[in-house]
Image (cartoon, rainbow, N blue to C red):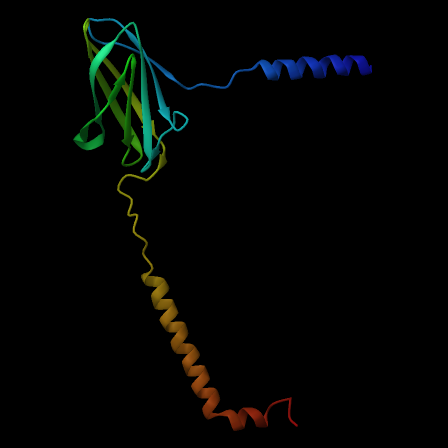
Length: 174
């Protein structure tokens, strides 16, 4: 009986040890006449956080670009062109998604073979909400504080003015 459990434990431990880490990289295919592929990785963890910088890495396969542009577009006609860095077949960029939502990423890479166009729709579900007022409103807290301070002042004044009457009814008389 013990040998059976040892074999099960060793088998389970071996299986868990051999498991690779999960990778959520996205495989993209060029939509242009020049066919190539790319693997997109967005840091942190392929799940960007709105309001925080994200690193975008495009690892191109079967293409050697010398120049590239990245266009990010979002809801309401929002569109921006981001600077990219080309290092061999790897293209990287830093971008801060302004708010949660879906963004269209369009990478245009230019090499000796011609242009390669890669497109991907990225959902941003963490971080700053679109249209959210990030300023803190404490008007109600200020009003409560002033009212509490006034009530405390009234109690202190009433206590001082009526201290002899309070002392006459005290259970701590001398």
